[in-house]
Image (cartoon, rainbow, N blue to C red; front, side, top):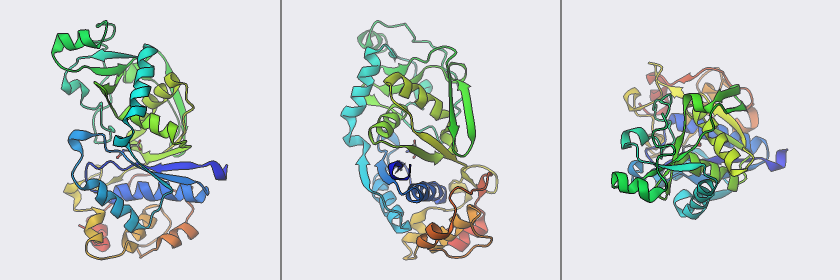
Length: 316
Ligand code: GLU
């Protein structure tokens, strides 16, 4: 229903926003606006070791510069009580257990696993049913244990992705139990579920590097007794070598163009071209994109940002 759509932009201040982020955020914005819905800006600033000073302010400025707007704004670090409540609920339902596996095993617990980590490393269940409580786990290893979510064996989770179609998999086969916190510091999978639920998000629009996270999140929705939103996972922007857009492909940060005092029209022009809405590169305004472009019509493939295109935009 047009008036019930709630979407969100969820930047993590772990680095500068680049062209790939801009494409995802533009499409999230367009889908919300096309539905006549509400859009939430949510700063995902809990990934502590990776949060960069000033990146939150820069991301905010970049998205405003692009012309995007939103209706409500939240900061995850101000919402810790909500996440801890959810963790406690999972604890009382015996759905989490303390785990002392090494940092290496756990390095994906707090970040959105979209930095190319291998998600196929199934957790072998070493700490499952091993400790009576967190204190026993801590006594064993001398540090705060993590909390792992217990995935039921053989349970399958499926969802109809707005872009990729039906996705289904047996979570215990390829993921196994996954971490949701370290000590009382909640991690990405739990936090995103609590927030999307509490904020009434009806559709999650994000990069398809997070497709494998979705089944984990569905398991959390089920354990917490909440109805999940719909999902719409977009292909990533890649460099000419087919790998996700990164520094080695040239400087594609939005701030490069913004701080030269230029408007966003070339960035928007490239984005419109990348969505198949224009045959050639030219400058576009956001109003023009909103008026003329059909957000439900997108190319199926990953989009390549070439050095020539970056130069045309004013990046590179
Ligand atoms: N904050 C995450 C990111 O920067 C997005 C997480 C999500 O959309 O679920 O990629």
